[in-house]
Image (cartoon, rainbow, N blue to C red):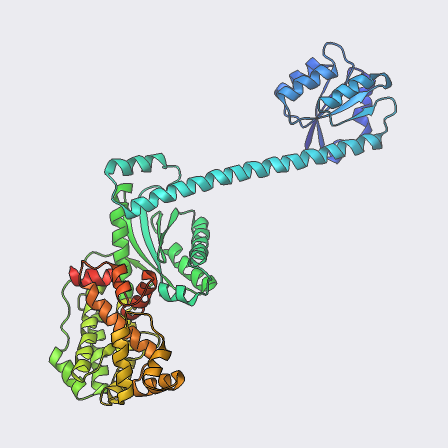
Length: 531
């Protein structure tokens, strides 16, 4: 309802105005009647008002003076002036002061008055809506700034060790924005994150994070539960109240439904104070490691002693090499499956995933040794299902992925052994191989190699692939990466110097290519061999 105050010193005019229009029917509420400006101000001091209808000529305080006071005290109130023919100068002054309109008392008709009032009512409603929108926007902006601030502090608390005093001060400062203690801390990871990014289905990594974060926040808003922090690399941290499992399950279902992505949560609770958040995140991250052994449970609570440092026994090195020597593909495949089953046995303490990966890398090394004894190179085998052995073992999400990939790769390994190691390339191809080994660190064209052996480039490319099982480009990359692995073991050689030494002017391109083959970046490879 639009609240209206009528100010008029003549009784008959006031009576006429009250009876002219069915005020309530048209959305108006008459809050009072005043006989002069002083009387009007007294009413306005006690009751809210949207629209003022006032005469100009009145005793004690006229309409002009009233308008001036109202504009100072209540600037939102719209004003309609009642005037006589001889009040023109007063009307002009009233309009200058901000009156919305005027109407002549002696000639006014109910329809005219109703039309003017409804126009003013519409203006009042529009301004009210704009004001509400502005208030809402301001409130949203304040909330957004608070969210950004609290998320920054939470990210720091999750990733850095604060002092007890610093953590307590932050917890107290933002107490009204944080859920009450105790908290449940959850760490979420997007499954196969690197593959998802490489697929480029979301056009950019930023858009992928944005899409996932929106869904997580919508579900959390439904439960009115806490805060979510983006941690990078497909990882998100969050705090919520106790009993968060149903919310987390719904998050996994929504992300699967709308983004076609699998996600996993590791959780830890209870957290009784902000200072414990850093350690709690470590425990929740550790719970996520269970994904390596079990990909069925999407929400994994932390348990003490989840993983062991001591590995389960596997077949001896001699047994593996004997099966390779006999080229007993079926026995090797069964041994790999038995090895995976041993790790998945519920009665045996599970090894920390990184230590388990080292055992699988050792197995890959045995295949490499066998091939070297035959004069071959593991890195010369074409990728299988888009992966190389070291890359698969180091980046696979689960032990099942590793074992299934290796079982499928073993026939490829022995086919390569039979086709390429026993067979010696013809002299022209061996000449090209030597030239690549000599020129790998320089910029050269394949057409130059073709001229050296009097072949056309297309014919040489086809013959090289037929004789060696790999392209000239792949052979050059293999030689470069072999030299890179040697140089990375020297801590005095910087990464960009390694890239330059093997023929790559762009260290970032070198790093990505190295990771595609090894499953880790050059810096991490160096750390593993130096420390």
